[in-house]
Amino acid sequence: MATEIQVPMLPLKGMRAFVTGGAQGIGAGICIGLARAGAAVAVVDIQTGKTQDIVDQIVAGGGMAIPISADICSEDDCRRAIDDAVAGLGGLDILVNCAAPGRNRNMLGKLSDVDWDTHQQIVLNASAILADAACDHLAASGHGAIVNISSVTSHSIAVDQCSWPYHVSKAGLDQFTRWLAVRFGGRGIRVNAVAPGLVDRDSGHKLTDNPQHRAVVEAIVPLGRAGHADDIAQAVVFLCSRQAAYITGQILTVDGGLGVAEVFGASLRAFKAGVEASS
Image (cartoon, rainbow, N blue to C red; front, side):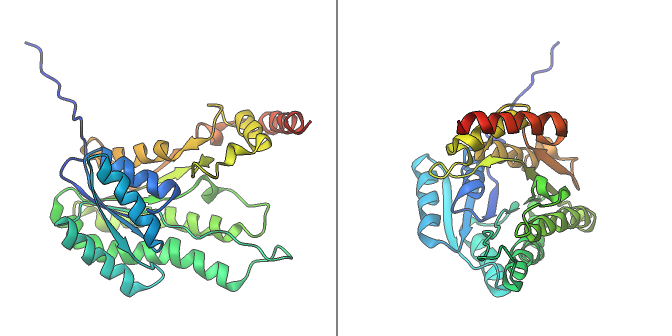
């Protein structure tokens, strides 16, 4: 007699998620993806208006979401935001650390101490504080999961000197993910990271809106396109689901094969594509 196989249509049904940086880009995509998978989502961001917009989109699609305004550079705000999410959702099963600062340069292309501190505060410090604030709630859920949003830049060196604090902070986040997986494993909390490659984050400001950028992406990415926020969201959904119940301490790269492409050949194709696109 054949065994009946049941595939869950909503793999995160009944779960409650907290997502930082949820007002736009990859963070917004993750919030929407988690909601589509059945989770109730706390959309957390400092941009109150945009946060409400994402909540409205989720609710209009039949999902459950609440907006939480928080400045995660503040430890008090981090801890208060977790408390608000638990109160609003009735508990917490998932924590996604997605917030990242913008990368600004001055006229000389030099990095300021403020830029360095902001990257470390948002990417590393806030992730650690939120994990600490959420751990008891995640443990109580019986299937708690943390997913940190890293980057393929965590293991590369920036030619642009203004980008290196971002690279360094993401590299630190990878190591923090591994450490936290060991630290929280005994409490039944799994901790992983997703490392996106080249992603078209916002529909109104796509990387590939620029023809040269699009030509280069098509030349160097084996799958021939930039990623979408939903590509990242689906990886997060998987890592938060029971299908990933024995996966922890891992960095899942979602880059269309960019990291395994042969460097010289890919660079040559990108150069030719860029020249052709500009001619």
